[in-house]
Every structure is written in C-alpha cells, then in structure tokens.
Amino acid sequence: MRLVSLLPSATEIVYALGLGDELVGVTFECEVPAADRAGKAVVVGGRDTRGMTPGEIDAYVRAQAAAGADLYTLHRDALAGLDPELIVTQDLCRVCALPSGQVSAALEHLGCRADVLSLDPHTLDEVLDTVLAVGERAGVPDRAHALVDGLRARLAAVSAAVAGRPRRRVAVVEWVDPPFPGGHWVPDLVAAAGGEPVAGRPGRRSAPTTWAELADADPQVVLVTPCGFHLDGAVEQARTVAGRFPGAEVWAVDADALIVRPGPRLVDGVEAIAAILHPDAVPAAPAGSIARVA
Image 1 (cartoon, rainbow, N blue to C red):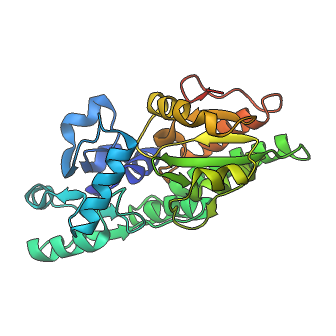
Image 2 (cartoon, rainbow, N blue to C red; image 1 turned 30 degrees about the horizontal axis):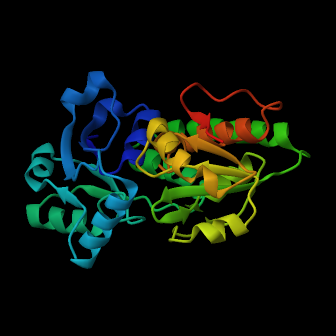
C-alpha cells in the first residue's frame, strides 16, 4: 500500500507499525530516518519558523488566521504523482497540520481516489485508538494491536510503580508568549505519570491564559513543553518563565518527541514525567529528554 502522511504524529505511527517502506509522502515537519529521506516526497510545506521568538510565531499564526490564509501548503502535483492509496491527515489543530477538508478537495480536483483517514484524538486513550485505526486501514491490524498492547503494558507498569505515592500538583505550559496551558491529552499524561494536573484543559483545545492564573493554581512542578520545539528550545523558554513560579520546580521537556505529537511516543512522555515526579520509583528519563531549570 502506498501511504502518505500529512502530519508528523501519523508518520511516527506508520514507522512504529513497520510501514516505513510503504510511506511515499510526508510533510516538511515529519521526522524521517536519514536513510529514508531521499525516498519520501514532501507534499506539504509551510513557513520555517526557526529563528522566530514564541511571540513572533504567535503573531504570525494570528495574522494568517485573521486574513483567512493557510499555514500549510499542499503540493497537489507532488501528491498526484505519488498515486497514494491511503492518506492520513487530521482536523484537530490548524496550527499543527493541514486539515482534512483541504485534502479531500484536492483529491477531487486531481481525480485521485485515495482513502483519507483523519486522526483527531483528544485524550490519551483516543491517541492509542488512532494507532489501531491506522493499522486497520493500512492492512496490518495485528501489528497495531500488538503495538498498543505493549504501550498499555508500559502505562500499567508506571501506574503500579507510582501507586499510593503523593501526587504533586503539575502545571504544563504548552506555549509561553502568550501562555497556553496543557490541553487535549496532556493532562492525561500527567495523571498517568502519578501527578495531579492543574490549570489544564483535559480533552479540550488549549487556549490562552495568564501567568497569574497559572500561578494561582499553585503548581509544585511546572513542565514547559512548547509545541514545535525539542529540548534545547524548551530549556531556553523555560528559563524565561521560571521566575514566575517561585518555590516550584520548573522543568523543560522535549515537547515534539514526548508531549505534543499524538503518537506512540506519548508513552515515553508519561515515563519521562514519572521520572520527574517520582525519581526513586521509576527509571531515569533518557538523556536529552528532560532538564530541570529551576
């Protein structure tokens, strides 16, 4: 089957299911093994925001939205040339990826008959369900069930390790200018890791808040997980806001690898958060995944 992924988390799922060789199209943000890059056509492009501050990125996104402009560009000719059988996309977040409506319209225009699967999870359980959905539509349901069973076993191991231990109050900051609290599945990650999520929006889209509201939630631990950034960027941003939470531990987390992309590595995120909250009960997080800044 010829697969096209229009969001980074779907690319992660495809590789986790052992279907990397069947993936023919990706986005400019997808993380693909170096050895595979030459064989993957980039069918979705967008503005390179590297070098922009969080405030500048937020202003750009708001300006595009106000103008009715898209944040991503679908390269229709490239897509048509791939003759895909299954395209995986989303409608969850227009800031994160191309919405499925544009994909369907492009396929109709091009006369393509690809199957389109939209992944729109809001909770951790729903993220795991998307793995099953991709596996089913890609013809490898047994692999998908085995993968999800393994992920659930890891979650159960964390739950057992932290059972009965004090749950510290944890606030997650997904963006720093302006501040956004953790939404959708992010509070689930904190709870699964043995923490008490505060100031978040479980199962709902994240929305701007104020630093005062975040501080009023009285977090004991603050996790800075800026969408679109790995650990270095998270550390830099965490340092700028650490002073707003006197008395709290402030940690930076590799957001793209562990927190914000709804794929199998969210379980790695649960394990990493558990290592922050209960370091004497679970294994240490891998090097380069978390860093304490205050």
